Image 1 (cartoon, helix red, strand yellow):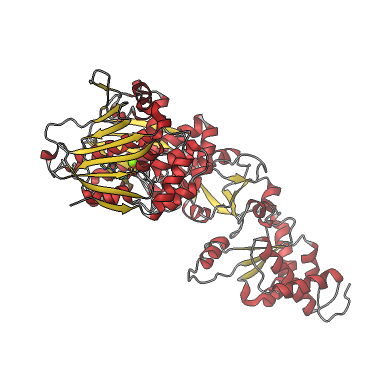
Image 2 (cartoon, protein in one colour; image 1 turned 45 degrees about the horizontal axis):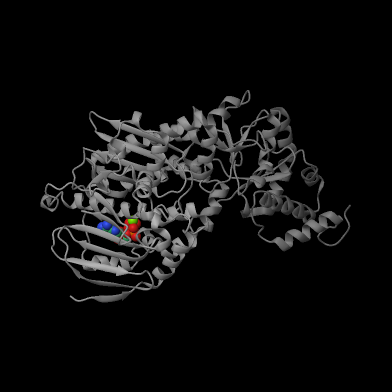
Length: 619
Ligand code: ADP
Ligand code: MG
């Protein structure tokens, strides 16, 4: 086939321009990207050679860097999988992952950050144009003897033609720009390789003045090196390589396990949330290696979805080299590794919470809502996850969120349960009438405002032998707040009022009763003891779920003058107005909507002006 010209995909052009423009002071990262591609190509070959060992034969896989000052070229060469002509057109002419636009939107102008984004979005190859005004890629696919050559000046099109190449693999030849001749200096190149690529598991060599090859890196898979030999910086550098994050990791754990199950795991907790964190489908997962051979990234089967923020890898001898996602899904070994990894992650988080509360706080703010899913998903570890939760509470309005063990330690005398209130916002929660009796009694109440909290409390019904109870649901167990004797006296005194009020509200409430939880507000709505919480019901209804609407209970505060007034009101129309107002304000206080806002406003005005529904002045 003869030479062909192709234009770049439209987006590629603007991407190239942007990249060159935005990384002018961070040019060196092009080398990191090209070495990373070379190393990926060797990983892919190793993987293919599992079923076709003749592809590698006795070769040692390696990367070579050759700077030719006279020709002004820099060559990065590997003996990995190589590319066919079609693969070159596809991989180097279009951006395979649909990430381009997203990538361009993410560019921040902060060069250090943008440099990392390049790796994350699979556009690393194009970074060669930062330092080169022409790039040539010569490649021969393993197992074939046809080679192709791709050339481009990065200005809109590329040419592809046949070529001769004696060996398998890829050669990227950069014609280095006049301004960037520093990248033809071996000392500069060696420095960059050590900085970014020391942990790459195959030798990276540079050709010296005498024409010999010097090895620049450790050339050993990072995680196989003894822990004692590895410094924090090494772990951080490897983290960045693995996750394409531009920030340091918050914490990590490196384990070698021998015996029944044999694996090495290296797990990291990032500092920042990746952009796809909320997409449970895009669950990133760990990298999986079998006996040092890279098998797959995003092995979601190794961690449950609620730990999808964890980055890292597992290298095991217990899975077959030809393991596929399907095999992985059904394998008992996977299950065992997975449950061991969950423990490691929880250990790591517990340790962080205990020894580095500042870091834990940062973790919680970033990933807390995801970890909470574990309460729903992983009942077996419920107690451990429960201890890791952090929640706002009534104890200290501006204070730090509390943990359940701390709450339990502070529980007041006579308090049997752990109390919580779920609400739309902290402000709404703090001024909720449901809290009044609890505040008076000195019972702390946890304030839960995350949407997922509704599910959390429906699964976490007990902690440390104490049940979790909503202050907005059922009998509030506040016998101690109001004296029982007084209570029963009032019940008799209000019997008639409660019945009349129920008749006014008819089907809108299940019952009207005197409240044990209100001390200041006149009324509130509560959900029946064994039903769904009011907020969960609302969320499900909003989400279009077809669930029967439950009827709340209207509670009235016998000590409130408005409720007192009910007793003295004989005029049924005035009585009706008052009951409607008490019901309406209870709906408003829980962040709900009124059935008939206009009517509510009219009634309110009548009350303020002391008018009866007929317009007659009553006070
Ligand atoms: P990414 O590495 O994230 O996929 P790049 O822009 O760095 O994105 O590379 C694009 C694609 O080009 C790679 O996925 C790979 O298919 C191909 N490629 C690049 N360099 C090489 C190489 N040295 N050997 C084989 N294929 C390569
Ligand atoms: Mg790459």
